[in-house]
Each structure stands twice: as structure tokens, then as C-alpha cells.
Image 1: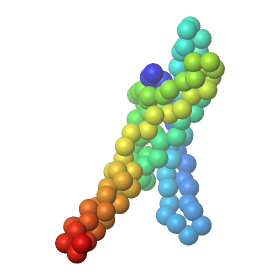
Image 2 (image 1 turned 30 degrees about the vertical axis):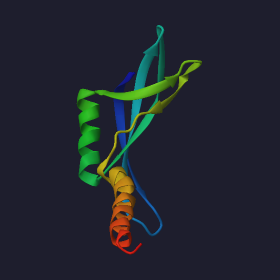
Image 3 (image 1 turned 90 degrees about the horizontal axis):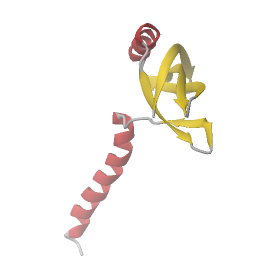
Image 4 (image 1 turned 180 degrees about the horizontal axis):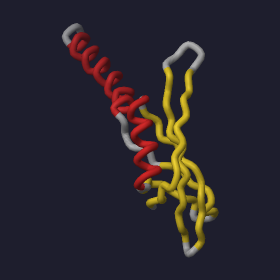
Length: 108
């Protein structure tokens, strides 16, 4: 289901020894069976992208995909797309596995 994005706030997060992250906390509203619900979703991005996203949401609005619990529509989860970083998490082990198989394949 599509939830309407109505307001955005940009937050900076930094791990103790790690990189700086930027999150855009977005207020959303959605309707199920004639009842309105509201909540927040978080969209992570880089410094420039988060600034642009916040500005765009506050100016134009937009929608984001969520799934809600049919038994309790006030409960929902945000559907996040596959990012290049999350894609690499699956791609790198596959490359190591294939490379290892090629090198070990000739030895047995």
C-alpha cells in the first residue's frame, strides 16, 4: 500500500568509530477501510541526498510503500528497496564462492 509522505526531518548519526550517516525521518499517513493512520518511516542516505530528499518531501510530498498488519492496521513496516550496498552483501560472497570453486575444481 502507498502511504502519503507529509513531513520530513533530517538527522545526523555517527557511530563511535564509524562513518556519519544521514537519515530522513518522514511522517506518513495512510488509510485502511476508511480509518486514517499515521506513523514514521526512516530513509537513509548520504549527506547531499538526505538534504535533497528532505526538501523534496516537505515541498512536494510523495508516497512510500508500506505493509500493514490486517489484524491491527496501526502496525506497519516500511518496504525498503534494494540498494547498491545491500546488493553487494549478497554479491561478494557469491564471487568468493565461485572463484574458490574455479581454483579448487582443478585440484580434485
